[in-house]
Image 1: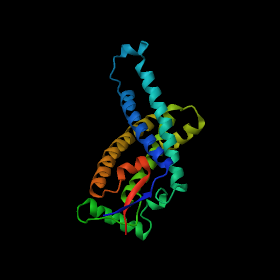
Image 2 (image 1 turned 30 degrees about the vertical axis):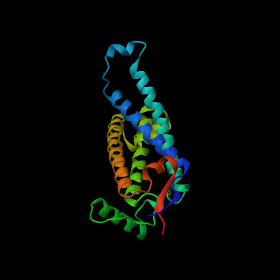
Image 3 (image 1 turned 30 degrees about the horizontal axis):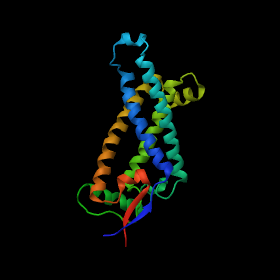
Image 4 (image 1 turned 90 degrees about the vertical axis):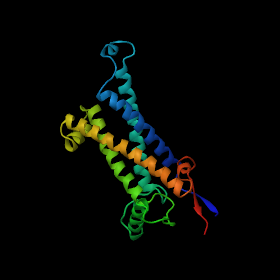
Length: 214
């Protein structure tokens, strides 16, 4: 069987992916520590000052996370065909068909996949759209907690979350979405790459995928 190499993901999409992934790892680890520090409180008065450093790393990772989200929103509007939002939503007959075919394939009811798609299937794409929406709420709640005295963040924060305590609770809950999403994402990427060897894993490094020659 012969394959043809095709460009799938732009350099900006690949940079977004790794900035998003690595910032989430940093944010989750530091977020758990900020929520429930496990070091001795006496260390806070020492030169080590672990809480200050942890908060600093959390804030830096938060800005990287924000940049990644903005990059993805830009690509939803101005990226290549595989990266634009309409390719990810079940709003056309082609996409609705792909969504049901993907559900059947993931349920081991049907084999194969749609050959007219180079990028994400619609189930994956729709999940990513939901994740970016969750990311917007996550970063707004984060900036509301960081800069409560600034009018812009206070306005958005009060409108979306109410009190800072509500924002903190939602911020914590949304963290679990990203953790669960990451686990399922890694599993399904490997599952798809094993069942359909088209370079799915390597494509996020090189930008290229391989399709069957017809």
